[in-house]
Image (cartoon, rainbow, N blue to C red; front, side):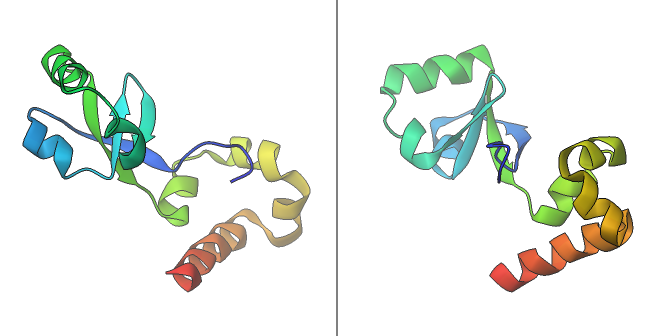
Length: 103
């Protein structure tokens, strides 16, 4: 994505190392981290985040889920002319179709 933001939303609070081990993505204090990053943590750091209750499962969103959550004004601001040319509804439908083709 051009904005650099990941399509990850916050899931359940992680309460154990077993639950952490099953996650591809986690969110710590609002920052999404992938498995490759958080697996480099020392065990004490993971336990500290769990005890502080600042560690959440990260849930990867599809294009449709991600763009549906953004209001129309922000989308117009970000993609302006492209959206105006085809219309907001058609543009969102196109994003969903593109996501399905990638799957």
